[in-house]
Image (cartoon, rainbow, N blue to C red; front, side, top):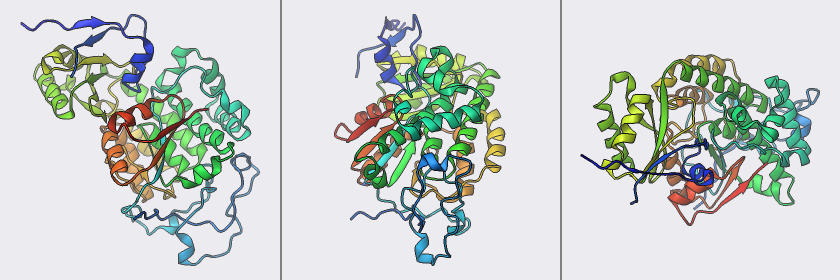
Length: 414
């Protein structure tokens, strides 16, 4: 009979580094065992008029930044400078052939913006945004859309409310885009922003990346994120499910562990890998009994530890299927444009340019495993030189460093 794994209490800071969705709770116990991108810039859609600031674009009375521009030649429709930002409401999708999803097939990344997902939130985030007018206005706009004081919740908490799925997802989305404005306010900030030629985000962060890339407006993105959080919470409430991080095993071993756990539980309790984060760190989702089986068997597979995640339910699995139809309806009613730079999908680790395909991908995302490890290794393999993590926390930077210790990552908070 195998010896039970010894228990170790880890400090909250150490626990947070294990997984982006982990939030410390009093008395949490961990099961522990000693261990074991010739550059070709992506094509972008071109605007021939200078863009107004984010501050101006957010004012209801502000005219469309592309209004009144003259007809353009086909050659003029291949690039949009950065100032076509996430608050732009003018549709550019018509400049991409209908149904085309190959605009970014041969992208060559050099500089990336990376946006965090749920679990990066922390009381006090958003404070720096108060000192930058464009960033502060994003919070004002968010308060109007959400119907509650998001900025106050971000800065003052309480922690338990901020950590809830329905609050944390809008909070991270807004704070991450506010971080873009904090960066822009720096002396060299605009040049950094202009250099970005690829973007992606972890789970929820994919919506932030799409907003930054101009696929939809800040406002429409926030409405989608709000509904996403609510739909995922409702789906979680409808089933007894959970998530656990398995530390110290490669993905093949974690799959074997899941298979072994699934042999001991009913079909409705089965588990699967939900987040492929980085080597030695994979999150498993499923029914509570299945998760308990994973925890019980982890030592026999030589896992270093397992960490039960403080999330509402089994994200990125079929347990979230009830949320899909609600997301599909909301996405169908939302104007989505072809992004101006590649946005890497969590579902297949590829960029998509066709708006209809983007809608399908976003609907699938909540029930599909997050392919973050493949995304990062592909970007680095294609020659990525510099990355910026924008938003609360430093989870993404930590993950990237585990994949490649020499990778260059800078954190920009708000």
